[in-house]
Length: 406
Image (tube, rainbow, N blue to C red; front, top):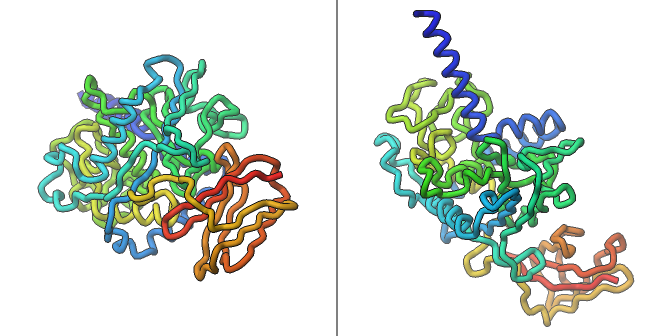
């Protein structure tokens, strides 16, 4: 009997570990990126330390709801994987409910933790204008014949899903859009890049298996919270137990989430005390079933907003001006001549203005910041002939102008 119980316990524990690894692949993706390039660990730790040392409470003071434009890249083998626009919009609605404390399952939050339920004051919406300033819906569809496109790698460890040259879909500039790729992941629910921990810049974003894009009215286990969980990772949140399970040493670096040794699965009705405090298995960053994920805490809110401000400062856009758009720059004299970009404002500016130039594929070719007091000359000798968009970023607004470079 003892031998049978030991074998049963070992089998159950092993099964739970396998399930947890399929629920979220972010930690595994991070660890493999470090193996490919150990410098990533240093860069990630540096960014994390900078965020932890910032006065995060000030990010809880919000005077308005900010917009985050979302771009979906649907890589599909069949019609079942070719997720409809309606389902994608439902997924955005699910994100908005969860990030604004409007989800209807808060009854699962234990009474002693209900005061931690937070409203992040972020609104996600489908992008309606592309990086060039043209009206274009943020849904990219790419057919494929390959299985498990969400896991495939090139010889130099590039994730093929992020590159059109390998049969995937190029990201829209991640500085201004939240990119979500949807593709077969061979049983894995989803994964995200962590801030500053991308092996390649084009891989900044989230990947979700089409089965877990939702909510799914037939499968009650899918309420669209794989995306909620992975967006939490993208904005700097870790699992409650940190990067290592079971040690009660490293946690999620959030002040108001209880120290927790390991994950929870299913829909637990009670929680344990694993590291000297009562666990809270119902945050969106644990691995319980979707119906039992119920909250982001105030501390998680602060960390996400601090991460956005430090790592993705151009991602949040005001409701009044949501997207990159052409505006009247008739008062500016802007032209290219002899491989120089000439910028002459109507009057001197007292503050620095950030600028960048994108090619027709949305790739950045130059950027910088400077005082445009009089005539400014910017060298563009290395830029090929073609059409570009020059953008100026000032006080949260983006002003753009199309240019032809000879």
